[in-house]
Length: 327
Image (cartoon, rainbow, N blue to C red; front, side, top):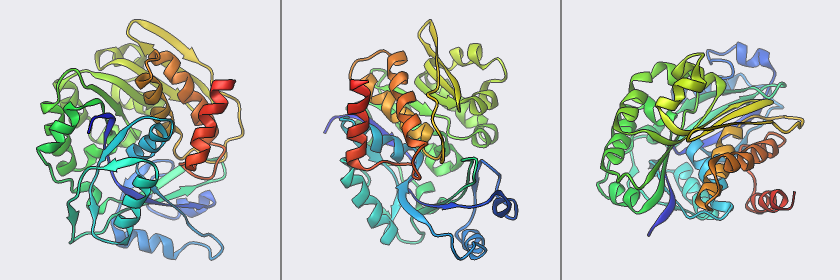
């Protein structure tokens, strides 16, 4: 089967909790950032939760969230990800199917659990993550993945993939075997990931230039320094740098634009970058310019930050696209 967008990403079941900042400060997590921790460390953190705080459970992972958006907007998507043979793994595959995403890896780990991400949202909508990567960081390379990439219009992945040597090696093999006609899209994911694994990002850039780069200002600065508007041109043909409630910077070829953020009351920033990328990739597949595609991404992210979830329902994705088209 030919795919519009082929994702390679972490398969994580997100458990989201709305807590006070003092709770996060009492843990060893990095406030408003990502940290990889063990399953046992996750359980210890959860044991300290106030009794009235319950989890909102959703199948997540950055690439998966983007694919859920672009798929429900009408894009044909496949996903290469690693699951375990357990209840969370089965839940994950069912969720992919619900969102019309084809699961492309039928190998299941037996010795580790499916990955789980604890997401703690504080009152100012900051997002702190403690992630047990589990099976998701043990992607087993299959030569068929290269054939899948060569039958796709866009190969899309996330910086979080680069934190695991196994995942990074698998992704690099896929990329090295992918034809130039298949565009490369990449989300930087997290400033700490960029700073900690910059050499791996550079290995990717040495293979080829990124066609569509998605990041926020902190990630761009971590990768390319304060002069990122110029420096990112060496890395990407087209890029967008979001900046929270401020304007986004977009480069398409030699054309530069700023897109003003929509003024909304944000309650949860989790998933904002993911839906932005998914929405923009959908419009690229439809044939729109990258700048116009990012306008749709900007609109979509303004919707998700008003929700207590990194995802929308299938019907709400379709409603979002309809509302944008009629606005």
